[in-house]
Length: 70
Image (cartoon, rainbow, N blue to C red; front, side, top):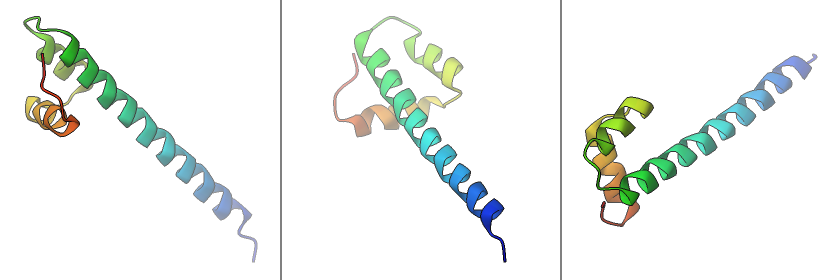
C-alpha cells in the first residue's frame, strides 16, 4: 500500500495549519498594539473593517491580553 500522497497531503495540511495559527497570532498582536497606541476616534472601527472581527471579539482580545486600552 502506497501512502506517499496521503502523507504528503497530511504534511502540507499541518504546515498550512501552523502558518494560519502564526498569522492569526500576528494579526491579533498587531490589532492589540494598534488599539493601545492610539486614542483616536474610529480606531476600533478601523480594526473591525480591516480584520472582519466584531467589536465584541476585539473587547475580549484586549481584555485577555492583560493591559488596558488607550
